[in-house]
Amino acid sequence: MAANLRNNAFLSSLMLILLVGSSYAITSSEMSTICDKTLDRAFCLKFLNSKSASPNIQALAKTTLDATQARATQTSKRLQSIIDGGVDPRSKLAYRSCMDEYENTIENLDEAFEHLASGDGFGMNMKVSAALDGADTCLDDVKRLRSVDASVVNNSKGIKKLCGIALVISNMLPRRS
Image (cartoon, rainbow, N blue to C red; front, side):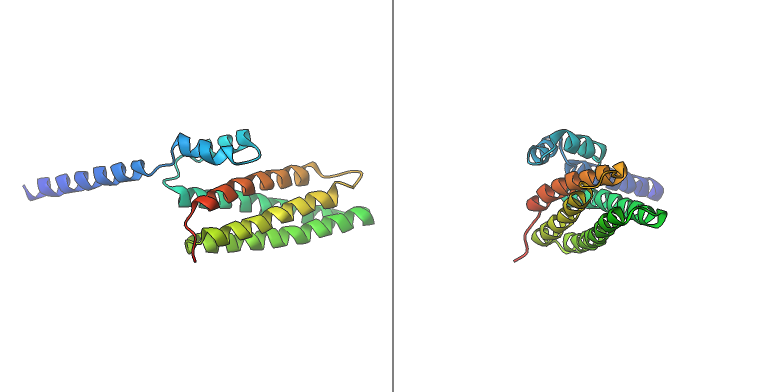
């Protein structure tokens, strides 16, 4: 009988967790609201639909920052590889400038995570904006080159889109005064 009570208590707790957890999942309506405010709605919806298991807006913000940081790190490594591989002096200068921008972008994303963890949506917004500027500046630096590495361009554009999503989400988070 005691074992039966423990099993019932366990099952009741499990059901409560599932019920509460599922009631806070990001809805398709919320995803649509977020994506309507971005510059690339289709990209946003595709990204958010792949992350729809996020239980709440804070978790979705973290997931979006994770994806942004992963892409920024990948781009930084690609830039270093291009610089190390030997390119003409003009290209090397542009790629080094890009590399500097990505070091700042990664640092700003680290700080955006800190603001998110402390519940500071405004601070997160400021740091994500700075990260977006870094990717945008990199694009400006390399677009004048005769031969541009496609992965740097594509990743920078992707980072800008992810930052756009993160900015919308950050505006939905609480603001610290």
